[in-house]
Image (cartoon, rainbow, N blue to C red; front, side, top):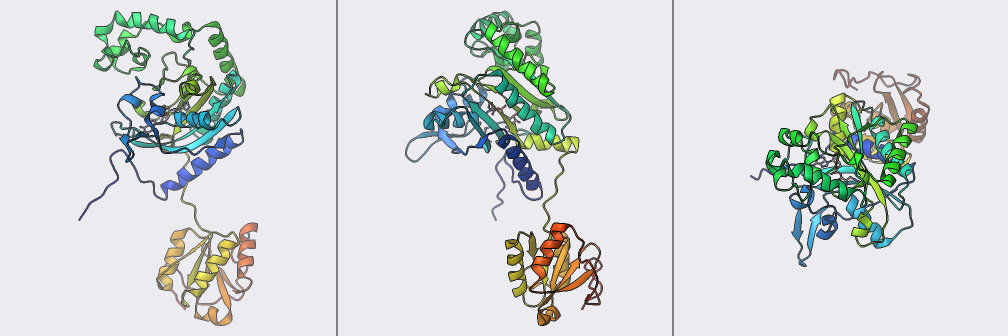
Length: 442
Ligand code: HAM
């Protein structure tokens, strides 16, 4: 017999865990929707060139892309990150500026799979095209912060840096190359050969060898041109004015090459440091042009759903349980009423469920308990004969008989007003079956 499993580095998200996903995406959509961001849904795969624009020297492009040739001979890749498709989409369709977009989407990277690092992960993100105003940076960074804070996370640090622009960065990179060139033999195996190609990455390396070699290295923050310095200062002031706590991290370089000026990361200190980035982003003022469009500044961020939830687990916050239905229909009179009542209740906006397969009353009450419903609507032979339904409060055991024609409206009204179920015991059918003890019966 086959023993199929989800591929290494991928996960199934099932209830009740999926309820947290649903709630997280809903909260994110509300938060960014209030700030004028609209949903963008882009293809799961693109021409490989779209993703090559995020940086030929990055691990994401060099080593981790799921690329393939389709049956028509096109070289495509599964999306490894969410910014490039949004920018490609803007360049292609040219909606008016500023263009404010958000997304919730899977990304694929052939990474060494481990806790918090997956081959398919999911990001919630925003991108804005069309403004280089530093106040927009403050808006974007503060939105990311408010999502994290809104989940109840307290042990998250916001790290901020500026990576300069085409004017000041080349001179800085020369200075950094010179510093690292003198210490090339001290660098770790990965970075020794790649230092000339991408010296910034060495600053971010966690290995002792690179840490020592970069101890006194020049830092971008000290080499910003006047325009970048003023921009960075206004971003910092904006965050201060908004009460968003941040820390300057002059070694922060990010793992993709398109960043200019503002770069930031949200680090969950409750998680293992190698996988504690719950989100990150920054400016990418040259990406639209690299994608074939007119020069158009851009900024955004992406947050890992899985990592956010791991951080929530580590801090014991955002523990959402599976949404319970309000009503469970128990039908031992053939099932027709269960079919009709559930449809009528749902049409009236009442969340309800039922059992199938002609189960016994005891089994149906067990299912009602498991469903989390507050109330059971019971239709046995006696109720069916009287065109009635027994409405039973599952917490107290109180019950009353209601006419079939009135039951949907009455249940809806009671749920809406928060009145208990049922309000009186008048007309209760006795003896009462107890689903919890399995005793009694009718
Ligand atoms: P990134 O830092 O590569 O940036 O990814 C953003 C977030 O996605 C990370 O902070 C992390 O939470 C999550 N993440 C990344 N890779 C994995 C993985 N293998 N397993 C689990 N979670 C992961 C970007 O992708 C940029 N597109 C963000 C951005 C948007 N910059 C500007 N706009």
